[in-house]
Length: 378
Image 1 (cartoon, one colour):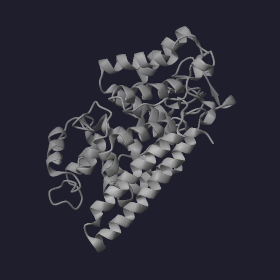
Image 2 (tube, rainbow, N blue to C red):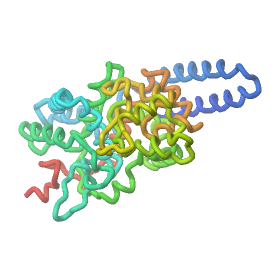
Image 3 (cartoon, one colour):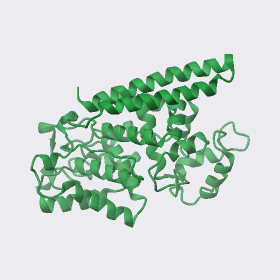
Image 4 (cartoon, helix red, strand yellow):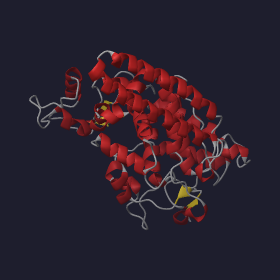
């Protein structure tokens, strides 16, 4: 068992233990009253102590599933150029030109990895042999960052032809997106060595991509089906501390909400709901116009997503569900109070996401052009 797996198992044990304490505290409050405050302190202290112990087990990421490893290109002498540095430089330039780009790159990796695994399948354009790749699916309609991946690929092809996979570029770009917007506490080593996939299906993307209207139970089930714990789901949801939601994803919570006397989703803070209504009026001529998922620090990778959520200021219905559901509420509240712990766990969860269903052998290739299979490029 490698150290990364040991760390993840330790983390899950810690979280499981905390949930049992949380349940005990909730029950005890009804009997003993003020014990709730004491219990919350005990739980927080327990988590902090055990999280420290978990760090002892995580010496390095070492070898990851699918044969990927940190520093793959450098360690194997495959490219004399600084592969990761080239990607970092291009992501930095793109971010300077468009501060919203990091959120787009992070979302691009999620869509890529969630469907067919982390294999660059989201990058493929329609072709005669495959007119309906993932990119054409409805959930992919607002994806951005393809040009940034193209720029990085062109730069890498110039120095190391057909060496660096598009799938690795997507993963490295996502890494740089989040670490570049963080104050320094979020550090992660992204393993590389992926192959680009040969399959891409719009139908599969439509069926698998998580809906912004999902309930907490649906989110738990969807993530468990892909091998993620409930706590990893909550941790990865913190990515919504950057980026925007389109008004057409929010407007149903602001007007004519079922069962609401004033038409507004009652789980929304009234003052915040009024702010959202000002940004997304009922007669909005452009339903695709956006609102920041985090109105406080929209361009900082921090734990404000959780602080907003516990204050009933989560934009998406699926995010609000996490803070309203008993199963997920405690972990969400904990993340709102402990940014360093969330940063550590987010880094682990992102690397886990980047290891989904990696291709090997004849199931993959190193594309020359990220938008088409090599067979189509000849």
